[in-house]
Image 1 (cartoon, rainbow, N blue to C red):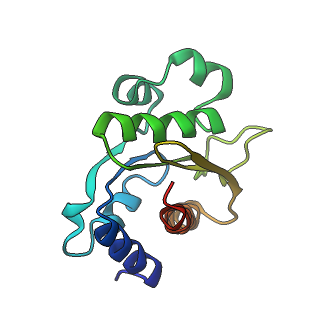
Image 2 (cartoon, rainbow, N blue to C red):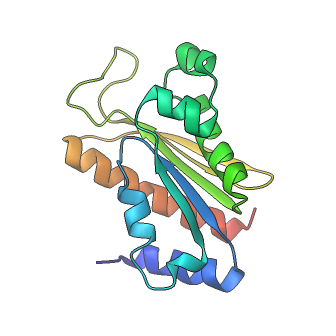
Image 3 (tube, rainbow, N blue to C red):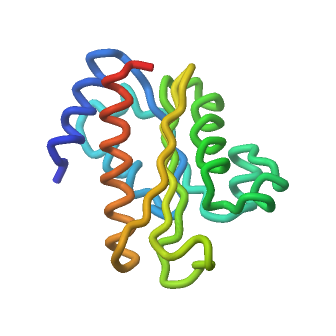
Length: 160
């Protein structure tokens, strides 16, 4: 069932005739699923990709392997490139990305389970935030998706 924030985003994107493309990793398509849940979303939703592996981030989103090797797939640098590159590839007004560690494995000493980066890219500006969500895999994925919607709502209000 679509939530209030999703309905507000839907109306705003339609009214402003703006488009969005999404690149997800740890959420496995949940964000794309929500953004396409309302009738008329095809007017603004251009593409959603799940680049779960490092190789898919390189091949589909053109993220250099050296960036992933240096900073990790779960990093500010990769989240920004994911959002920028999906926006540019689709010619969307906004690119939105999520990359994180939902667990129960994959944690490191510097990136515990629940570490998530969400980035919104517009033509002239990026909003990128780091989060540390508590809980199990399902909760981390759900919280990541909901936070991405809040960032999108704020970003579309700024009209950057």
